[in-house]
Image 1: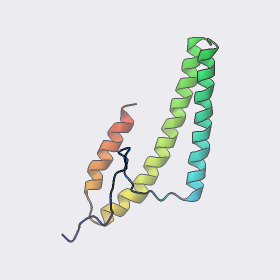
Image 2: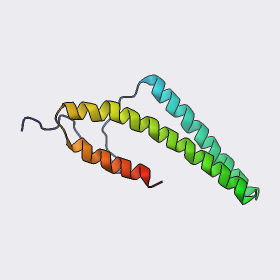
Image 3: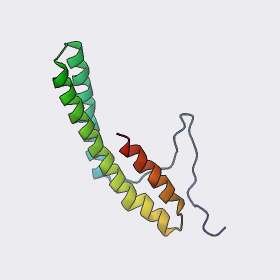
Image 4: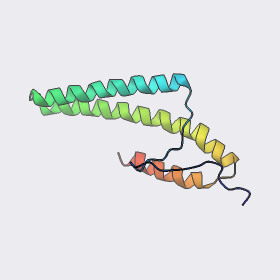
Length: 110
């Protein structure tokens, strides 16, 4: 099997893969900044519920938080396409396409 995958895939106890991504430091910093902001938005929404804030206002904040999460997903998907997918295709690993379809389906459920 000349085109066998070179990448070792294992699974942790939580069921997640131990494959690694290779994002540049600036991208990691941007993603962490965005995720920290989203974390703050979630805490704010919890506080709004505790304070019995008007439902429509809470929904507006939920919508903004979902949009922020979608932005993070878009950044990750772009990096995945330009990095992991291109690399694996160039190695002859076409199984990445099936994985990509599943990933896109997960994103479109939202």
